Length: 225
Image 1 (cartoon, rainbow, N blue to C red):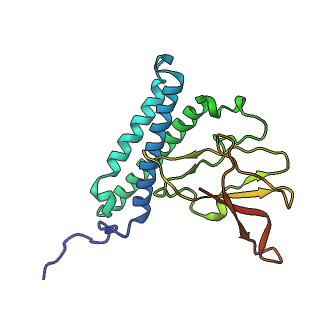
Image 2 (spheres, rainbow, N blue to C red):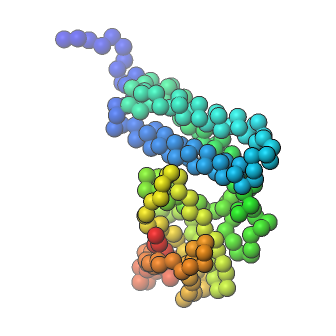
Image 3 (cartoon, rainbow, N blue to C red):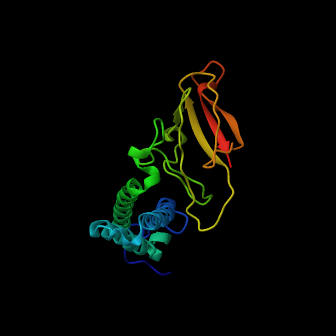
Protein backbone atom coordinates (compact mmCIF):
# COMPACT_ATOMS: atom_id res chain seq x y z
CA UNK A 1 0.00 0.00 0.00
CA UNK A 2 1.38 3.39 -0.95
CA UNK A 3 1.64 6.04 1.74
CA UNK A 4 1.35 9.78 1.07
CA UNK A 5 4.20 11.39 3.00
CA UNK A 6 2.65 14.89 3.13
CA UNK A 7 -0.66 16.04 4.65
CA UNK A 8 -3.21 15.26 1.96
CA UNK A 9 -6.19 17.45 2.87
CA UNK A 10 -4.15 20.63 3.38
CA UNK A 11 -3.14 20.50 -0.28
CA UNK A 12 -6.13 18.92 -2.01
CA UNK A 13 -8.57 21.76 -1.36
CA UNK A 14 -11.15 20.50 -3.80
CA UNK A 15 -11.70 18.45 -6.93
CA UNK A 16 -13.81 19.58 -9.90
CA UNK A 17 -17.28 19.93 -8.33
CA UNK A 18 -16.06 21.13 -4.93
CA UNK A 19 -15.03 24.64 -6.07
CA UNK A 20 -18.29 26.03 -7.48
CA UNK A 21 -17.71 29.54 -6.14
CA UNK A 22 -14.40 30.04 -7.96
CA UNK A 23 -15.74 28.59 -11.21
CA UNK A 24 -18.94 30.65 -11.17
CA UNK A 25 -16.99 33.80 -10.30
CA UNK A 26 -14.59 33.18 -13.20
CA UNK A 27 -17.53 32.84 -15.62
CA UNK A 28 -19.01 36.08 -14.32
CA UNK A 29 -15.67 37.80 -14.71
CA UNK A 30 -15.44 36.62 -18.34
CA UNK A 31 -18.90 38.05 -19.07
CA UNK A 32 -18.13 41.32 -17.29
CA UNK A 33 -14.88 41.71 -19.22
CA UNK A 34 -16.74 41.15 -22.51
CA UNK A 35 -19.40 43.70 -21.52
CA UNK A 36 -16.77 46.27 -20.59
CA UNK A 37 -14.94 45.84 -23.89
CA UNK A 38 -18.23 46.30 -25.82
CA UNK A 39 -19.03 49.45 -23.85
CA UNK A 40 -15.56 50.80 -24.57
CA UNK A 41 -16.01 50.08 -28.29
CA UNK A 42 -19.37 51.89 -28.29
CA UNK A 43 -17.74 54.82 -26.53
CA UNK A 44 -15.01 55.09 -29.18
CA UNK A 45 -17.52 54.76 -32.03
CA UNK A 46 -19.89 57.40 -30.68
CA UNK A 47 -17.25 59.93 -29.77
CA UNK A 48 -15.04 59.22 -32.77
CA UNK A 49 -11.62 57.69 -32.94
CA UNK A 50 -10.12 61.17 -33.19
CA UNK A 51 -11.61 62.21 -29.86
CA UNK A 52 -8.32 61.49 -28.19
CA UNK A 53 -6.81 58.55 -26.36
CA UNK A 54 -8.44 56.98 -23.36
CA UNK A 55 -6.61 57.93 -20.15
CA UNK A 56 -3.73 55.54 -19.63
CA UNK A 57 -4.79 54.69 -16.09
CA UNK A 58 -8.14 53.34 -17.29
CA UNK A 59 -6.55 51.24 -20.02
CA UNK A 60 -4.13 49.92 -17.43
CA UNK A 61 -7.10 48.83 -15.30
CA UNK A 62 -8.64 47.02 -18.29
CA UNK A 63 -5.35 45.28 -19.09
CA UNK A 64 -4.91 44.25 -15.46
CA UNK A 65 -8.39 42.71 -15.43
CA UNK A 66 -7.52 40.71 -18.58
CA UNK A 67 -4.27 39.49 -17.01
CA UNK A 68 -6.03 38.46 -13.81
CA UNK A 69 -8.63 36.50 -15.78
CA UNK A 70 -5.85 34.72 -17.69
CA UNK A 71 -4.21 33.82 -14.38
CA UNK A 72 -7.51 32.38 -13.10
CA UNK A 73 -7.85 30.07 -16.13
CA UNK A 74 -5.05 27.91 -14.74
CA UNK A 75 -6.24 24.33 -14.22
CA UNK A 76 -5.66 24.52 -10.45
CA UNK A 77 -8.27 27.27 -10.16
CA UNK A 78 -10.83 25.18 -12.05
CA UNK A 79 -10.22 21.82 -10.40
CA UNK A 80 -9.34 23.06 -6.92
CA UNK A 81 -6.13 21.00 -6.87
CA UNK A 82 -4.12 23.63 -5.05
CA UNK A 83 -3.20 24.55 -1.47
CA UNK A 84 -5.40 26.93 0.49
CA UNK A 85 -3.04 29.90 0.14
CA UNK A 86 -3.20 29.54 -3.67
CA UNK A 87 -7.00 29.57 -3.55
CA UNK A 88 -6.79 32.77 -1.50
CA UNK A 89 -4.52 34.25 -4.17
CA UNK A 90 -7.12 33.36 -6.82
CA UNK A 91 -9.77 35.17 -4.75
CA UNK A 92 -7.56 38.25 -4.52
CA UNK A 93 -7.15 38.25 -8.32
CA UNK A 94 -10.94 37.99 -8.71
CA UNK A 95 -11.60 40.90 -6.37
CA UNK A 96 -9.09 43.18 -8.07
CA UNK A 97 -10.41 42.31 -11.55
CA UNK A 98 -14.05 42.97 -10.60
CA UNK A 99 -13.13 46.29 -8.98
CA UNK A 100 -11.13 47.45 -12.02
CA UNK A 101 -13.86 46.49 -14.50
CA UNK A 102 -16.58 48.16 -12.44
CA UNK A 103 -14.56 51.39 -12.27
CA UNK A 104 -13.83 51.25 -16.01
CA UNK A 105 -17.47 50.52 -16.96
CA UNK A 106 -18.90 53.35 -14.86
CA UNK A 107 -16.39 55.82 -16.30
CA UNK A 108 -17.13 54.79 -19.89
CA UNK A 109 -20.93 54.78 -19.37
CA UNK A 110 -20.81 58.27 -17.92
CA UNK A 111 -19.25 59.46 -21.19
CA UNK A 112 -21.86 57.87 -23.46
CA UNK A 113 -24.35 60.54 -24.61
CA UNK A 114 -27.36 58.26 -24.18
CA UNK A 115 -26.76 57.65 -20.47
CA UNK A 116 -25.40 60.95 -19.21
CA UNK A 117 -27.36 62.10 -16.19
CA UNK A 118 -27.50 65.71 -17.44
CA UNK A 119 -29.22 64.61 -20.67
CA UNK A 120 -31.90 62.47 -19.01
CA UNK A 121 -35.47 63.65 -18.45
CA UNK A 122 -36.97 63.70 -14.99
CA UNK A 123 -37.57 60.21 -13.66
CA UNK A 124 -35.17 58.52 -16.06
CA UNK A 125 -33.18 55.58 -14.81
CA UNK A 126 -29.60 56.42 -13.89
CA UNK A 127 -27.74 53.35 -15.15
CA UNK A 128 -24.61 54.28 -13.21
CA UNK A 129 -26.41 53.56 -9.93
CA UNK A 130 -29.32 51.26 -10.79
CA UNK A 131 -29.51 47.72 -12.11
CA UNK A 132 -28.38 46.90 -15.64
CA UNK A 133 -30.26 43.82 -16.81
CA UNK A 134 -28.27 41.44 -18.98
CA UNK A 135 -30.36 39.51 -21.51
CA UNK A 136 -27.79 36.75 -21.92
CA UNK A 137 -29.14 33.38 -20.72
CA UNK A 138 -25.61 32.38 -19.68
CA UNK A 139 -25.14 35.22 -17.20
CA UNK A 140 -25.59 34.72 -13.48
CA UNK A 141 -26.51 38.21 -12.36
CA UNK A 142 -25.28 39.43 -8.98
CA UNK A 143 -26.68 39.38 -6.38
CA UNK A 144 -28.06 35.86 -6.58
CA UNK A 145 -30.28 36.43 -3.53
CA UNK A 146 -33.69 37.45 -4.90
CA UNK A 147 -34.45 39.47 -1.76
CA UNK A 148 -31.49 41.75 -2.55
CA UNK A 149 -32.58 42.36 -6.15
CA UNK A 150 -33.43 46.02 -6.62
CA UNK A 151 -36.90 47.19 -7.57
CA UNK A 152 -37.79 49.94 -10.02
CA UNK A 153 -40.14 52.42 -8.39
CA UNK A 154 -42.96 53.85 -10.49
CA UNK A 155 -45.87 56.20 -9.86
CA UNK A 156 -48.41 58.15 -11.88
CA UNK A 157 -47.01 60.40 -14.63
CA UNK A 158 -43.52 59.01 -14.10
CA UNK A 159 -41.24 57.72 -16.86
CA UNK A 160 -38.48 55.19 -16.27
CA UNK A 161 -35.86 54.10 -18.76
CA UNK A 162 -34.20 50.68 -18.57
CA UNK A 163 -31.12 49.60 -20.49
CA UNK A 164 -31.05 45.93 -21.52
CA UNK A 165 -27.52 44.89 -22.36
CA UNK A 166 -26.76 41.81 -24.45
CA UNK A 167 -23.14 40.71 -24.03
CA UNK A 168 -23.37 38.05 -26.76
CA UNK A 169 -22.28 38.94 -30.28
CA UNK A 170 -25.58 37.79 -31.81
CA UNK A 171 -29.27 38.41 -31.21
CA UNK A 172 -30.93 36.34 -28.52
CA UNK A 173 -34.55 35.84 -27.44
CA UNK A 174 -35.22 35.45 -23.77
CA UNK A 175 -37.60 36.60 -21.04
CA UNK A 176 -36.43 39.39 -18.74
CA UNK A 177 -37.88 39.63 -15.23
CA UNK A 178 -38.04 43.06 -13.58
CA UNK A 179 -39.34 43.89 -10.11
CA UNK A 180 -41.66 46.90 -10.10
CA UNK A 181 -42.62 48.76 -6.94
CA UNK A 182 -45.63 51.06 -7.16
CA UNK A 183 -45.89 53.99 -4.77
CA UNK A 184 -49.67 54.03 -5.27
CA UNK A 185 -51.65 50.74 -5.39
CA UNK A 186 -53.47 50.24 -8.67
CA UNK A 187 -51.06 52.32 -10.73
CA UNK A 188 -51.23 51.39 -14.41
CA UNK A 189 -48.23 51.58 -16.71
CA UNK A 190 -47.08 50.78 -20.23
CA UNK A 191 -43.82 49.33 -21.52
CA UNK A 192 -42.44 50.75 -24.77
CA UNK A 193 -39.28 50.08 -26.74
CA UNK A 194 -36.80 52.63 -28.09
CA UNK A 195 -39.15 53.30 -31.04
CA UNK A 196 -42.03 54.04 -28.62
CA UNK A 197 -43.82 50.86 -29.73
CA UNK A 198 -45.72 49.04 -26.99
CA UNK A 199 -43.96 45.89 -25.75
CA UNK A 200 -46.01 42.79 -24.90
CA UNK A 201 -45.42 41.89 -21.27
CA UNK A 202 -46.84 39.84 -18.44
CA UNK A 203 -47.43 40.89 -14.84
CA UNK A 204 -46.73 38.30 -12.15
CA UNK A 205 -47.63 38.64 -8.45
CA UNK A 206 -44.89 38.50 -5.84
CA UNK A 207 -45.52 36.75 -2.54
CA UNK A 208 -45.27 38.66 0.73
CA UNK A 209 -45.45 36.73 3.99
CA UNK A 210 -46.50 39.87 5.87
CA UNK A 211 -49.55 40.42 3.67
CA UNK A 212 -52.90 38.87 4.76
CA UNK A 213 -53.41 37.47 1.25
CA UNK A 214 -49.73 36.42 0.95
CA UNK A 215 -49.55 38.48 -2.26
CA UNK A 216 -47.67 41.76 -2.27
CA UNK A 217 -49.81 44.84 -2.82
CA UNK A 218 -47.11 47.28 -3.91
CA UNK A 219 -44.57 45.07 -5.66
CA UNK A 220 -44.99 42.95 -8.79
CA UNK A 221 -42.78 41.20 -11.32
CA UNK A 222 -42.81 42.30 -14.95
CA UNK A 223 -41.86 39.66 -17.55
CA UNK A 224 -41.11 40.79 -21.09
CA UNK A 225 -39.22 39.58 -24.17
